[in-house]
Length: 342
Image 1 (cartoon, rainbow, N blue to C red):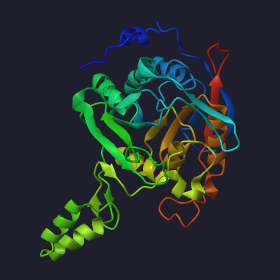
Image 2 (image 1 turned 90 degrees about the vertical axis):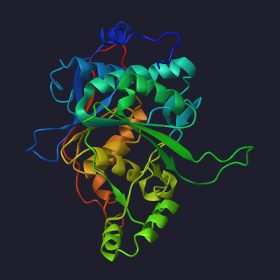
Image 3 (image 1 turned 45 degrees about the vertical axis):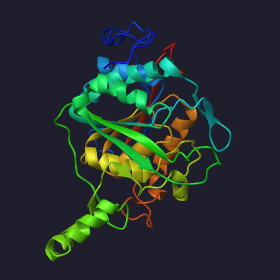
């Protein structure tokens, strides 16, 4: 089943740039070197992500040729949700505009997802973070692009917090749609301790196996398999030390789980709505390579600062300690003499 709406471009026309958006020439704006002996430099791009995705797909620009296309093991994006809002930083700076609605919103995301699929490695995965406003439409869209057979999960991330008294239940969860490029996706099963996220099913299972002490001990040591509903990760406001003044920031624990489940050390992670830079920061801490893109100046500045000061941030394994490592080499790129650049 396909979504039908006005101004839906053919995939072939998108690849042929008949939408009027073209690949761009890249230039290095800044370089941050902490290690002289590296074969890869992480990349942060300031510009429209559709242009950057087309540049990767074309695979001709000498700065990225054969470095990204078909090599990305994980794409995570937290795009606009269709809220009709203008988002600002903690000091009132413009962060991003979220005004697209209806078919315009769907087509905006569709074109980027079509190119994202082409960039993924054959064993790669994509996680798209949404909420109740557009999640159901994008599920149909991703079935169309990636194929229903490559749908893996609709993850429900549950959180809690204050809310207005309304004539409906408080809306306290997001959707994260998990698809793969092929059936041969990488998947590292994750576990959680029984004291977090323990369902009634888990308790029943535990009681049922109580007679088998060896199995019970193994289960308790290993923990409970992470399922497709996540209640053990709080909203970012609960992780006060992470807050960096960017709206809609997501917690590092959320990205830690997604990155660990779908990549190994040294793999390439991409986020082309990188915003506050959480994906890139967590990828860095977990020993993954990364590529990020955003067209917001606030996003680029905050992400740059966050990476430069990553040694002062908390360690993922032991949040009571500092990470105490500098970021590996990374570069900030812009588009060279391009009229479409934002």
